[in-house]
Image (cartoon, rainbow, N blue to C red; front, side):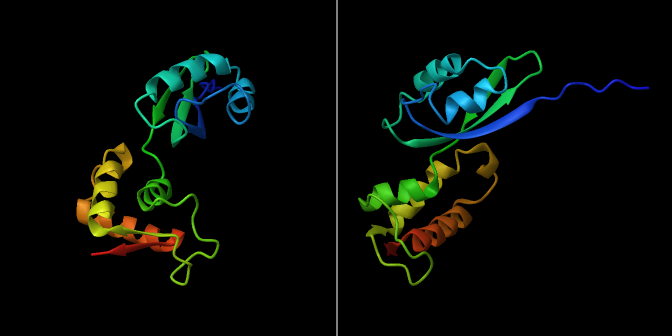
Length: 148
């Protein structure tokens, strides 16, 4: 009979830069796994201090069987970057090509957002041209018009 080896647990969270607290969603998500949320919050806030406070930051926390953890912070969501560039507070209520326009950005803005997204390890192998096309498609979805 073979013994099963305890596995790492992955927890994915979307936390605002510089504003992590042990309140939900962080506290319950980590506390239920035996991690002290305050330790995570201090380190997360220190590592995200270079971003505009409140920027939503996806992160993946790896919790080991001995209750130690590490985490990787990803780039902000494309929709957030688009809305920020367009100066809009939130996206269109109706999504898709018929969405009401909430703002406009230039193709250069879309390219710059693609460059930011390319820093994400999972997207690093994708060409800037392909990422820019994805950013433009996301812009249509949230109601941001991209002009040449």
